[in-house]
Structure formats: structure tokens, C-alpha cells
Length: 347
Image 1 (cartoon, rainbow, N blue to C red):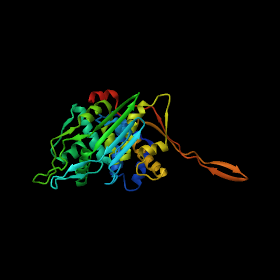
Image 2: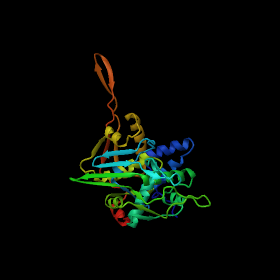
Image 3: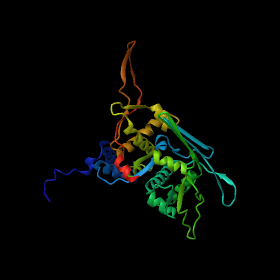
Image 4: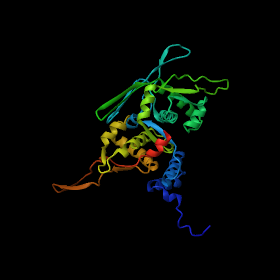
């Protein structure tokens, strides 16, 4: 091997400056957390740009709107979000209890696990071009092999709960564009045993197939947005980060090259700010999640309009300082995280 290594690039130099600062700070304390390590690993792969992509799919309405980020509570039975030409309305359902033999209410789907389940189900439907999805009989296997989560008991319980909520809920997807409107009234998953019987060894079992509703499946084939599975895995701890990533993935490549788009903080708050009483707190949380998204989605061109330095004014001999509030984000035309050619080969 030649001694001259000037053509080699250190892996640290492939990382953006923001991530290098985070990495340096983490080493100075207790080392990077599992979430930070996951972000670092995927960001390094994205920086090299030569890894093999695996693709997940999301319905475009779920990219522009979102499921509840956290449990809205048993009393909330309807969730409705609107953004531009897309509207999402989810109504919590009732299911038959196998012992009491009465219909009992079940809550709305929420959080990162519900999003991962939906993405994975969409992926299987697109790849097989079928609404009937063959799955492993063991729920543990589904969690580990398909959702890429550890087989901890809390993950098993959470995924089981979100599958039940998704199955029982009724959804309405509305998309109005170019003078035409499409409305889907359906369930996402049908014919599903929500109670998950156990075998003699107490392993949680479930049916060997999941059936998507005909209406949802047909609309998904038309309005599926491809997403990088590695990016999703890196952001799987955070509902807001997953929602921002999905939104940018379907939005940025449609921004006109010569006309960047400005999104105000008020508009972002209306779209993503569920559960935050104050805009200031939402802005802080959103910025943290956005930084994580941009670590992995490196081709995304997004500018955060930070507040300008305070300006001095002299009034009646007194010097006063006025700070202008931050205005929002600028979005610039950017390639999607999954190229069109790769998406077509995978669909």
C-alpha cells in the first residue's frame, strides 16, 4: 500500500459541521446516545452517497398532514388536519370484545410506532402490488424484521396497540388539485384480528395476512411518496422529525427552481404544532427536529430565517433596541431523498 494517503478522506470530514459539533460535545460528556449514534451512522452513509437504498412509501396526504404525534386521550375521537390541498380526518373506532361480546371504544393511532407500521404496510403493498400482505405469524418477528425495532416488551406492546388503533379507525383522505377533488372514505386495514391470541408459550400471534381496504390500496398506488428506509430508521424516535422528513420529501422537488417558497412560523405551527400552547416553544422543538432531518436528508435545501441582530434606535435621547422576530423557513428546489428511477424500479 502506498504511503501517500492524500487521496483518502477521513470519515469525520464527510459529516456536516453541525453534526461534528454535536459529536464533539457528546464525546466530552458521556459519549453519544443510541439515537445520536444512529443519526451519525446514517448521516455518514448519506454523505458518501454510495449505499444501497431500501424504500418505504407514504401516502401523499400523510406527507402533507399527519397522525397525532402523541396520545390525544380517550375522549378525543376525531382528528382532522388540513394543509394546502390535502385534508386528513381520522375517526376512532369501536371493536367487538371477545369475552364481553360488546363493542368497546378504541383510541386514535398516534406516535412514531403508528407511523412505522403504516410505512411498512404501504411498502409491502407497493412492492407486491397487492392489498393482501403476507406477514410473519409472530408479532415479535414483525417488530424486529419489518419495523427494524428491538424485541423489547414495550415495543411489542406499543406496536400491537397501534395496529389495533389503525385497524379500527375510519379515515377520510381528501386531495384537491388542478380543479379536481378526490375523497377516500375507508379503513386502512380490514379483516384483522385485533385481540392477538397467544399460543401455549405465551408468544403473541397474529393472522398470517393483513388486508388493506380496496379504496385505500388503489389510492396509495396513485399517490405514494418514496422515502429512504435508512432515513426513517434514524428518525424513528421522533414523530415530529418523521413528519418533517415526509413533508420535505414530497414538497422540495416541487418547489420552482427560480422561485423559493417561504413558510411562516405561523403556518408551520398550524401544520405541525399540535399540543404546543406557545409558538415560541414549538419553534424551539421544531428546529431541533429539523436539524436531525437535515443530517440524514443532506440534499434538502432549507434555510431557517433566524432573528436578525437587534437594531438600535435613538428616541428622545434614549437608545432603544428592537429585535425583529424570526420569519420562518425558505424552501429551495431539492432532489427527493429517493430518485424517481429507483422508485420506479421498486414499485
